[in-house]
Every structure is written in C-alpha cells, then in structure tokens.
Image (tube, rainbow, N blue to C red; front, side, top):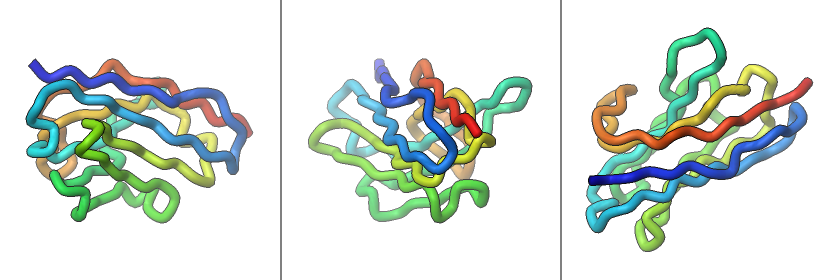
Length: 119
C-alpha cells in the first residue's frame, strides 16, 4: 500500500515562501502522476498543481499560477511544492495525492500539512 507523508508547512507572513515535501513509499513512485491539493476552513478541497511521472508535464490552478512550482525527485520518491509570494488566501491544509486525473486525485492521499499565511 502506498503511503504519503507531507511536511514543510508552517506559519509565515504574506510575501514569504515555503517548500512543501511529500515523501511516498513504494517502488512504483516514478510511474505515478502526482498532485497537490488544499482545503481551507469551511471550504471544499481544491486542486493546486499536478506533475506527470517524469516531472515534465505540469498544470496549475489559476490562483497559484506563476507563484507555485511543483517538481519531483524520482530518486528520492518525493514531490515538492515551492510556494512563493504567499497570500493570506493560501492558508489551508495542503495534501499530496497520487493518480491525478484532471483536477481529481484518484489514488492515495497524505495526512496533510498546515500552511498559515498572516497578513
């Protein structure tokens, strides 16, 4: 069974940067496309970004385009989300997931990491 563990969240100020990591167990990591999602208090979970198995194909939600970058290191079984120019509206619990179809995660999910951006 695939397990995902997110890390790197925290409390930052508007304009700061954070890098989230998602470590994935299992030998087949390099075959998965991977994605990041987030859920703010009182809101539904939403798609943030996804990357193909090689990292060469990426897609982003309009709200983060130009500020966030998704990447992966298949040798380390890890996917990253570099978040720059953070805004208070980026405050949410961030989750990584496997097997992304469009903007939906169809596979396994991590437990989430909290990102809080103060104004």
